[in-house]
Amino acid sequence: MSASSTERVPRLTWSTVSRLIRLPSQTGTWLLMLPTLWALVLSAKGIPPLRLLVIFMLGSFLMRSAGVILNDLADRSFDRHVTRTRQRPLASGELQPWHALAVLAVLLTLAALLVLELNVLTIMLSPVAILLAALYPFAKRVVHLPQAVLGIAFGWGTIMAWAASRGTIESAAWLTFAATVCWAMAYDTIYALQDMDDDRRVGVKSSALYFGSRTWLAVGTAGTMMLLLLGIGAGTVGIGGIAYGVLTAVGLFLAKQVNELRTPVSPARAFELFQQHAWIGTVILGGLLLGFLW
Image 1 (cartoon, rainbow, N blue to C red):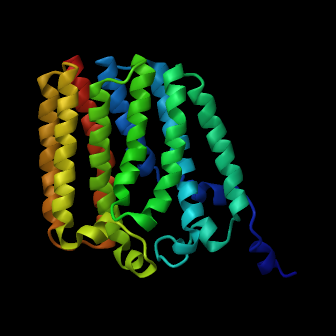
Image 2: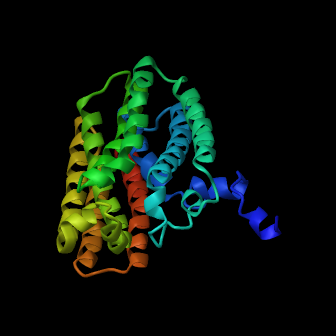
């Protein structure tokens, strides 16, 4: 056997596992984690307990990593035909499905150990998070707005965080959940602009394809709803006025993004606009904290 053929034998290495879980790019982890931090701040009416912060930050990394593995397992036949994804380890053949399942098992075991540190209600809610993560890749084959399914999956973390903090699920938790769904609709629709031609060719559905030339309007509506729902939820727990000033500033920045989307953007620019949402979520988190501390 030649050296070149030996190098092509699928095997687990740090490099392939790193790329499998998207370790070099953690925007997705931030987008999953930040709404859980919003929920922790709102439920604590200020700085949450360090223990909960650590658990949900680590849990966000583990569950996002598990989520992208589930996505790649389901989409590997599609990914081979999409320019942006054809070099992913499963699509390229660098890893076999059983390799990915082994890594997935480790990640879910670690996530389960974290959940066991929480109260009974949160433990009971946790299987739903895995179910939603598993459903999202298949939603792209069935529904025209799979970004909404992603938002529900990401938003479930806010429900778990609230339950972990308060031992119950109050109306503000559901408003934060709904805000997260709307936020995911906004940023993941922008993300989907990168793959419109390939998605249309291979038959994958997305909100960017569904809305077409009105994508800017869909993103603007989703962003507006996110800010309104989050503002109402924050108001129900007695947040201070400075938080609303921050949400207003975020709204102005989102309006700038929406205006740019009125004309076609390149895939590279779409990715830049998507990445900006990690900063948007961070600014919102800072505004919520200031709303209680100042």
